[in-house]
Length: 513
Image (cartoon, rainbow, N blue to C red; front, top):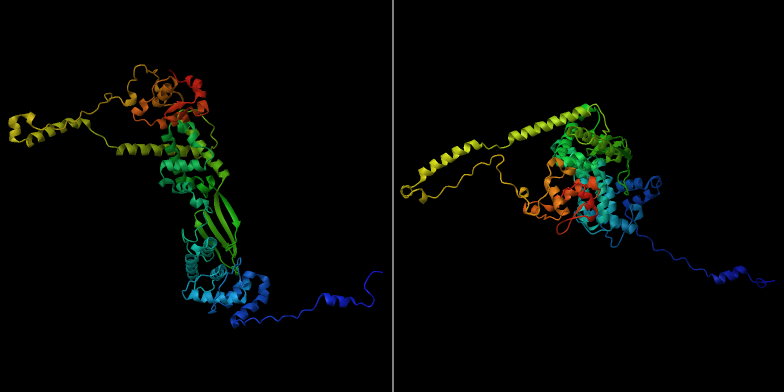
C-alpha cells in the first residue's frame, strides 16, 4: 500500500520541513510620562466602549494642562483622530507641538495634530470661556486654514456650530458664515426686496414678485397695454397688503403664506468631529436670520427654516392674477377668471388705487410750472437794464454800435411746436396710409407700426435712426406685442431690421400699405 516508509515518523518529516525559529525579542518601548500613561489606561476603561467621543473628552480633560518638549517629524493622517489613534511617539509629538503653540509658536504640523487641537477647543478644553475658545479657533483658521481647503471648510462649519451650541452672538460673514447656498432665503436678492417692502422701488418689487409667482405678470395683457401702470399698481398693492396683513389675517405672516414653506428637521452639530454632547438641560433658540433658526430642547437640536416652495408660488400666482383680473375690468381689457375671492381683496384693491391717486397728485404738486405770461415783463426789465448799462459813446453812435442782447425766445404755444423728426412728412414715394392711434393693432405705437409698414412694403426705414429712435428697442417691442397674434418673433436684426419671411402674409392681413 502506498504511504510512509516503515518506521518513518510523520512528525520527524514535518520537523525537517519546518525548522523552528527562535523568537526575537522586541526592543522595549520607551516609557511614557506618567500623565500619558494614565491617558493610555483610560483606553481600557468602560468609557472606551461607550463612545469614542466621550473617551476623547475624558482623555482631553486628563491631559488639559500637560506639557511636553518632544518634537515629531513626519506625516500623521487620520480621519477625525483621537489620542487612541496615535502611536506613543506621535502622542508625545502632539503634546510637544501643543505646548509650543500655547506659548505662541505656530509651527508646521501634521493634519492630525491640528484636528486634535480643534477638537479640544470645541469641547472646551484649554479655554477660559466660550468667547476665548472661539478666539482660539479663529487663530487656527488664520494660521492653518488658508493652506488647507479641507480644514478651512470643516473649521467654518464647526465655528458656526460652536456659536450656536454655546449661544454666542452671530459672527456675520466671517469664517463661520453659512456655506454658500445653504441658507437660500438669506442670500436671495429678490427675497430681500420683498422683506424691504415699502422701502423698495416699484420696478424692484414688481420683478421680485414675478420671481416667486407662478403667474407671470410681465406676460399679461395688462402689462403689455400699460407697463408703467401695471408695475406701479402691483408694487403699491404689495405695500398695502404688507402694511395691513396682520389686521386682515391675524396671527399669520405674509411671506410664509405666499412665498415660504416651513421645514423642520433634527440636526447634529459638529459633524465629523470628536465632540461629546454632555447632558444638556438648556432650552433656547438661536436665530441665524428672520426665517432660519436652531432650537435646543434639553439636548435635542433641530433646525427650523422657511424655504421657497412651488406650492407657495401657486398661491402667490393666484393672488397676482386676481389683482390683474380686477385691473382689467378697470381698464376695459379682455377679462380673465379671478382665482381668489377673499373678502378683503376688493377693498384692498380700491385702497391701492386711492394710494396711487394720492401719489400722482403729490407728484403733480411738486412739478415745476413756468408762467409764460411773465415773459413780456422779463423782456421789459432786460431792456431797461440794457439802457442803463450803455455808455455815452454807445448812445451817441446809435443802437447799432451796442452789442445786441440775446433774444428771449417766444414761448411755444399749444399746437405751434415744430414737428418731431418722426412726425415729419414722409419723402415722396413713401407716403403711408393714415391710421389713427385707435386703429393700430396689438397695441403698436405709431413708430412701431410705421417700421413694420416700411419693411413690408419696401420703404426706407432709416427715418427711425434719423429721428433718434433705437431700432433694436422698436424691434423688441414689435416682437413682444405681435407675439399673441403671430405666436413667434416677426422681426430679426442684423445690419438692420428684417422681416421673418414666413410671417409676411400674416402681417399684411392687418398692416395697411
